[in-house]
Length: 376
Image (tube, rainbow, N blue to C red; front, side, top):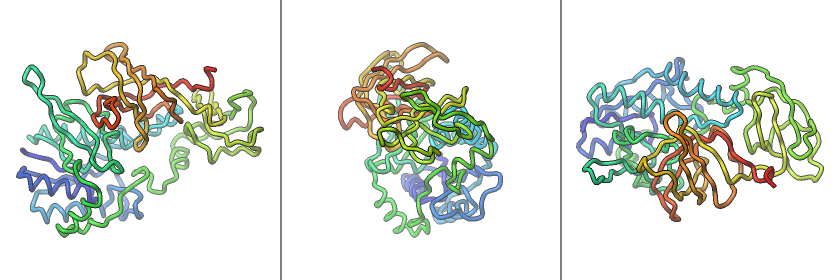
């Protein structure tokens, strides 16, 4: 196959490209320039897609003897990931930009351009497993599963991909642990073998998300109220500075009457209201998710499943019911046990219902959740 290897400049994508070459594929490496003004150097493990990263990727490609290109996706990344991130926070949501980058950049923009140029698949350094199952009509369907390395599993951030996108994807690292990947890179002589993993949000290398959002959204003062009494406890400069479940940085002068910590329990962007309360207000067992992606039989209307709402969270047993069609389609999800901190904007990724089930069934973007404390 003709394979386009997405090479970020890190150890994972380097080994993924090397494995694609070793498998006998016709491989071309490509580095995505996602910033109009990339930093000359990354700062430790913060940030990515810098000139340094592009250089690291090129050196690996040279060692593998494969062609290498840098593709400028900065404008597309700004519109589909950064602007979406800012707009989502302005609406009082909690988005996952890595998930959106996978959906709209690596497996849409990159894949579409690659296929237009005659490539069959995109290979990345994501930790997930991918196979295909044969259907009764003789066609095949992609099967996305968790990686062997549970600590590095990235099936959650890939759960938004469509069957078409997965059918043209390769995840060569899914059956290997991270320490083994680093050892393989070192044995191959790759200088990135010990390079730190990037973390936090790649386009906010300072790590100060509130300042980044404030510079783009501006001041939007509002009230902070108590979840139980409805009393105003203080003022804030904008809902973009808060997320559901947040405890620190609330700016409250006095502790709660019972002495227990307060958390952000609800955000209303229209009124500018941030509600805070005890931990019991963070528990939810019912939620609605829009923009559903289904990786199993589209005719299924409801099923038992396990639901994960964070990239590194636990999957909780529950039940999903699909309602509506087309643009109006949504998922009504009920959990067997309430979970803490469900927030609009997060993805609800559905897995097989059996304990330890590693197959992704589908996903949706959470639009609302019903806190348990308010139903009593």
